[in-house]
Image 1 (cartoon, rainbow, N blue to C red):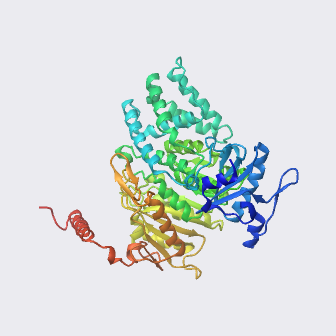
Image 2: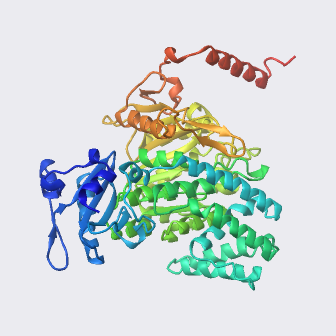
Image 3: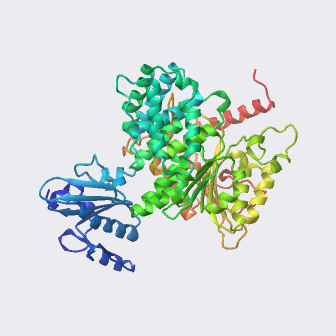
Length: 605
């Protein structure tokens, strides 16, 4: 394909040449922004400085190096341009080798390495499509949710218990992704289980905790009596459905693929028994938002001390990998910068499986209580903490010295999870290590101005800063836990009353563009005017308000607070009366009436 056709296909309006012949000089670009350009040399001493074609839209750059007939050796040149681009703009990249004598192309999402090669990309696309490599596709999400619901019904029909389903399906999905062959007619169900075990052993080969993780997966999944009772026909039916209806939507080489995989786990974990209804698995778009506001990048060391199925860890890893310029940087992120702890054995197995599906060196996920791993946390030295602690932790989940302060009839954590924040902050402060912590907590922690919650709020602010609080939509965990939640952001190791600190930012983030849908939970909505996801624009607004600390009536406020104050936007923002309707008034009256009935102040007739 000739260069003019390449430019036309991707979109000339996105072309960003800065020298003749539509080429792009990185030395010139670096000099314009007063950065020092350091040329990269190959093994023969040759330097690479001028890219053939460059396109930019939003925060995505497409780099094309043209050849008459490219070879493996040309990848080194393209890789150098990716490194320049990351140093110059920090943009996410799509890197392409393209022939001029035919239509052959080779495409990488991000780093030019075997793991980031997009083998199915055999033709050039438009710029909008390349930008989509880094954004979620709502139609695929809905399809996965629908197929997950159908799969749940199938597992119910084959007597797989609810608590086992996520881990069982995750294990099957992992095996299928790595070449499990289950179609041979002579295979028995026992032989399929053996083949799945072999896949797991190979994947965990370099994991220092291999024996422990294999033992858990064998005992809790493959060795479970309900899995062992599956007939060969039932096993094949389940594997076939996963292969045909789940696996095609999961491309772990793209951000949208990562989103879909997390969505699969989160959606599936909503099908739990009544005893587990308070398990609050974090929705994927909220993990994405929290990773962005804490600024996760390739330098971040991320910890989730209550990692559940691993959604925060996967999201943080995705964002960090997108910031990398080389395969070496990516490998370092996977092996040395992602840390997780999970108390529950079964959910720990799910987190392990989730990270393995994402090709992560998952040896830094530990099973146990974060309160017993203080030294491990100190050694990790995380500078970003993302967490969603249990809101109703029982005595077994918390340290004895804290439980000893509870009254005898107290069954659940009176701090509603705030004690986890205090513990992590204290652990890092003990080694004078600064970090940023974003945590999901029930709204009760924000409005609490007395008792255990107020005490912890005051103590946390003695050594740490409350940077921001976001009030999240009602029923954010629907159809799982029913708690109303907020996201608090702390600066660990910076005193709240430090004169350099701005006032705390409060965001009223009640509308995320999601709507409840039967059997599917909360579903992302499309703007009928633009055809794009409403959430994408809403998230952009939330982040812009926070980063610029802007006060907008009905949306946000800034206010100086202490541990005795309410930490909620509703207490400080001004109402935008222009947006109020008669329906809003009626809803408020209804809510107040329901409150009076609930508290016993009035009685229904």
